[in-house]
Image 1 (cartoon, one colour):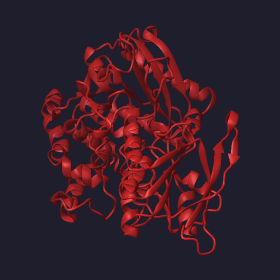
Image 2: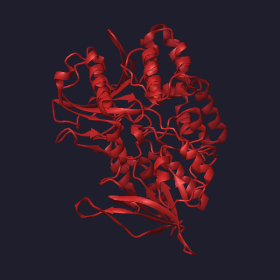
Image 3: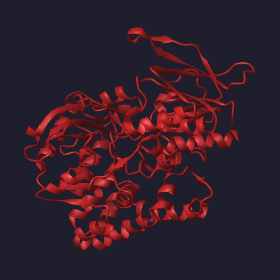
Image 4: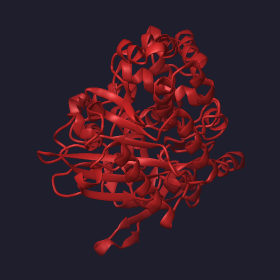
Length: 511
């Protein structure tokens, strides 16, 4: 592979992972990032004050801790370590103690009372075969990871069948397995990570996978902030000779003329003195990997894509957005039930029926009066995030795509209110607060189109055709141009597998 040159457009976890894989194979790799620092939405920053580490995007990593990509890159050797809360997740319930997702399958099931057996039957087989299931779920279509026995086609098929038998249903249907509102609510909080209405097929898979991950590997945070994942990836890339150019916006990709060895020329704008941007000369590369969603890919000047592929990109649906609020808390959140403070993640929004209704409303473009809220408490596991006696928290609500203006501010107020209902005295405990609208999020990272965080709604169509119907989903149909973002399999999440899979496909194609 020596002598090959690659450009990676975008430095989110997928772009950085793809760059690391190619650099380790001996390629000359340059990552181009529009922002002043790499990492995309995985970065951390001191937005609430000096010494207060807030994660701009994901804080809790149930699939990062078990990512085959991160294992392959040995990020622990680059300083990445995981911190586990005492309880992976909790679901608040009106006027009664929360439902808890413990690390122990048996303890979780026991606390669900008459739904003990139903929880074990639904989640238990996936936990028992977690190694095979998590690798199969994250593998590219029709490919295996290597020569291990659990990577064979037969083993992968068996693992996916275990998940499919339980996850193919709509979450509304799967919830009927449970007899109590407590068990249904606990399952609903995890299924809502899909951002898809519960009436759709495959939404149950999110509840099963998140529940099984909690029992098998936990829902940890990266010690020191999610920035630690970015730092580990950049350290691995630089160790193998790769480099990152920040403040560089790639605006065009075109086929190289004549008989140049390099296949494509990329062009863009580099931030100049005083923040201005200047057009820079074109640079020739063999391969371009784009950590971009369909909207950004279509905006690249000069990029020739097959008409069928362009049509698929134009049909891409992003789905609901989020409004996010960061908080600095004096002490910890004064939850009505102390067990809630022990959880790294807290789901709020009421019963299964209430969450199902609010998710359906967001997909229809309606802001629910009581939206589903996902809250993380990184300080429950990692006391390095804030000064002594304080803690960092963030929460988001699922809202209509592109929500703006007073409606977005109203959503932030609804988040405050939902927390306050379950934690009397919450408002008085807040030392600092910052709300992010969908427009703020997209301005921070262009891949968060309209404020969506999943790279595209994981409906059945967009699960099968992500982003286009193809047995080789990382190819764009144009030689030398590849897609490695969350808009490819296995979908959204800070696990790097999209980039890992795409880079491996490049190596196979040119090997």
